[in-house]
Image 1 (tube, one colour):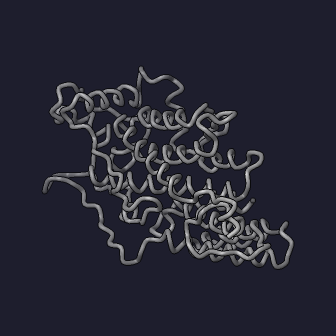
Image 2 (cartoon, one colour):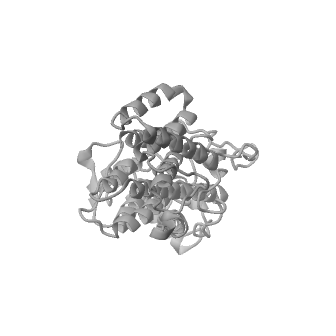
Image 3 (cartoon, helix red, strand yellow):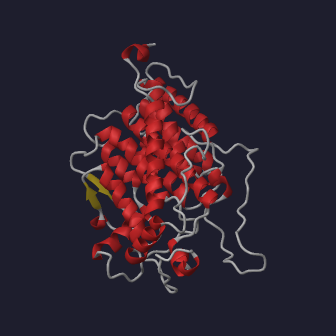
Length: 388
């Protein structure tokens, strides 16, 4: 389905290149809309959104395409001409007639419903970030890349963003804190004699994973139906979005310093086990938001939990991980979904960006979100219920 691939790419760009309160979760909105449109016709799963029905004979292809088109055109009216052209191309193979017309209507309604469900309510208060500092003391004027709406969006599967808030990072005086900081000091330094040579490239490659390709590799497997794939895309992206929301809330709640700050100021942490290195630098640029918990890790764990339910823990042929920032020659294939999450988490330590406790607690959040999604939403229907 060409528009599906196109929509996936454009939605990802919308999320990461120029985020606003409207498009910060564009990928999940597109996936939800396409699931509802497809499922209204095939009736394979319980719907996430109520009230979307389809007449007999409606085209699944037309419905899914129009669902994606509706979401993307609403989010980016300035690009509507481009989306219109993509819609024409992808529907060229669908015969004109009642089925195509009915499918288009289903897709438009599903797209509009997904937009309403995933949007930030207009009356939601957005609290701006206030830097913590002593009166009169200098602090870097740069603001965190977490924007106010990042912690205000309504979750898909959680009751609130704080529902799965973890216990918090290890106390500064603890042995665990010292052990975690020492690990990232040694393995995540810009110049490290202990980091394996290939792990630096891994850290860079996994900084920007191509999740579209990861999902497409599963979607293209023989025997899979449009409804199965639409459900997989929706659950994966919605769970990932909820995990991200939960982690952003926790980051702002705990406000825990990054390894670079902690290592350069280890003489002030009250822990005799930590070593201050005043000129320590991480391998990769440190993101402009708190360390705890890890955003990359929560997203990977949430998506992996959903995809393991699709393929089993060790899919045939392994799991191919590709990057938006590196050539396919630098792709990595791992045997299990656990390995996928482990590699992602270790890459953030090798990057010098996160401590192990930040990673492990984020993984736990991601797994919980994924399990909630699988247990309570878009459940398979029995034959009897499908016919009702």
